[in-house]
Length: 224
Length: 224
DNA sequence: CCTACCGATCGGTAGG
DNA sequence: CCTACCGATCGGTAGG
Image 1: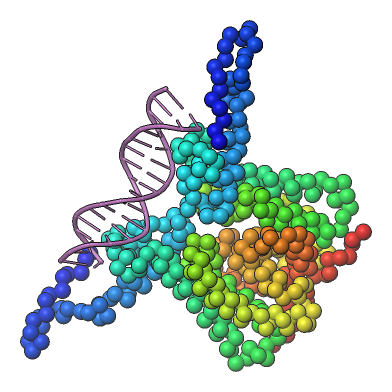
Image 2: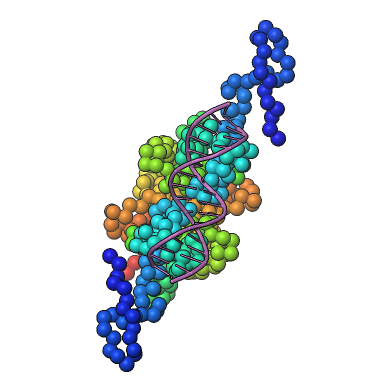
């Protein structure tokens, strides 16, 4: 159901009847843009970027076929916006882990467990489609867009490095830090393909299993 | 350069001049079909299924835009054929590992190393685009096609299970066999995203690293 | 396998 | 944001 058309604003001294006309900022432009972003993320995650049409996205957001281009210059720009949102979400979650007051005093194995847990939570959340689009649609980006995104991903991975280095120094990591990072994140990222979100709350157990598999010693030591 | 047109076949008693007319079997139909399959796999791997047009594939094989449909009923059927080829290749490689005369006497850690190595070799081979399409285009399949393929994938994974069970029994696996299988294969499958084939022959080192990361004990013991 | 073609769809735009 | 539209492209087909 379309909203009733805004009544024209009469002389400013006169108290306007009906609903006042709104500027783009006062109107729900931001909400409409955000709705597009969310529906785009959902469709990109489910169907892939190339198999999703801008008409699909518009319809999901309750708009006409041309309307997404009022908010985004192109389909490509929409994808980039989805992906940037995705890494920002993931970056903030990991940064939150690192900034916890106890983090510096936590054993490296438990630090890693927290990174793994945060990563899985943000990646497998059925209500957050942004992050998995980041992982699975990079080839749909242009070169410059990929480069732009790559910098943010590097930042993201950098947050894991201190704990990985510490574990390597302790002899708990079976291989070099760079390879461990690639293999561990790969194992986690692939969970998108098989994880069943309907079996709720098993992310905890999954994080435990991953930690136990990747580390030489049982992951429990160092727990309070 | 197109082949010269076949000359019509005169009376069978007469020794035919020029090149004899060929039936579909004798003609290079099989080669043309195979060429389509290979180019389709390459394009699906590079660009994704949805972003690849049947015209792209036809052009890559040196055909006209309608010709792929002489060999394949639809674009979907072409994808399924590519993926079935992919798992068959992978299945044969793993079966070859299992059938080696020494396999049964090999320590489980080294069995797993061979599975990992074969998996990586077949997945990262720049001359074999079929296997990575299997991994990354399953959502482009119809439900029945996915089910069909899923059976073959289950067969593939079954070949890994005995060595994983043995390792678990030996306490060398940090988690349950089902989760270990998912996480290990995930880590390997993700290597498609970052492995640089131009740095040749590092698949060996990668397999070593993976084994060392996933197993509790250093992977060298049990070597001849 | 090619030629010639079709109906449908797609990303995007002009103008309000 | 909608209306109305465009040019290009796409999967697929008929007929040979």
